[in-house]
Image (cartoon, one colour):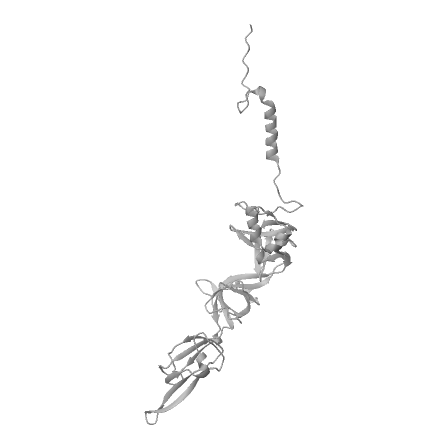
Length: 342
C-alpha cells in the first residue's frame, strides 16, 4: 500500500488550512482594497478644499445647521469685499499733553486760601472752564512805607487760565499760603500729542505722511486719527531714532497723559485687497479661523492668513475669496457644534 506523500505547509496566515483558505482570502483582499481606497468625506458641490480647517482636537471643517437653528442662535454673515487699505509704518508711542494745554495757578500774595460759592467745584478731577473762579486768597498787605502789616483783608480771586481738568492740588483749605506757591495744576486733554520714535532710515517716508492712526492698550477697539505735528531735529545716538509728535483729537478724554499707544503712520495705500470684518475672526489653539457659508445650511471652516487691519476691516491674504459670505456673529457656536457633532 502506497504511503501518501506529505502535503506542503499551505496554511493561511491565520492558521487555517490552505484548502479552506481561498474564498475567505479573496473576500479579505477585496475588503482591504475597499478600506484603503474609500474616499474621505469632503465638502461637495464644487467647493474649494484649499485652507479647509481640521482641528487636531477633532472639530469638523464642515458644519451643517438648518435655517431655523441659525435664526434662533443669531448666526449673522457678511460678504467679503475688496478695499484699498492704508499702508502703515507701525511704531510705539506715549500720550503727552500739548505745551499750551498745561497750566498752573499760583498765589498772587501771601495769605489764607478759601473756597466759596461756585468755587466749591474746584476739586481734584473737576473740569473747569477758562476764567472760572477756583478760590480766593484772603491776605494782609505789607505797607512798605511804614514797614508794618495792615489788616486790609483784601480778597484776590484765583482764575483758571485754561479750560481743562484739575490734575493736582497743592494746599489744604484754610492753611496759610506763601506768595507764588503753585496751588492748582490744570490739563486740557481734549487734544493731545502722541510721541513716537522713528528710525532715521524711515525719516524721508514719515516726512511725507499726512496722517496717522492711534490705538491705546486701554481702548483697543477705538481708533484715533491724527496728523504729524513735528519731527525732531536730533537723532538719538544710541537708538538712531528721531522724536515724532502726532496731534490727535481726544473729545471724550479717553487718552490720558503717559498712556502707551500704538501709532500706525499712513505712508500710502494698497492695491485692492480682499477684506473681511474683524468680527469674523475666530482664534482657536493659536490658529485664525473663519467660517464661510457655502450654501443655506452648510458652513465651512477655513484657516486664513491676515494682512493689514484698519477700522474694523482686516486684509485676508489667503483662505477667503472676494464675495465669500463669512460668519460675523456665531462662529464659536459653529466651532462648538463641529466639536460635538450636535
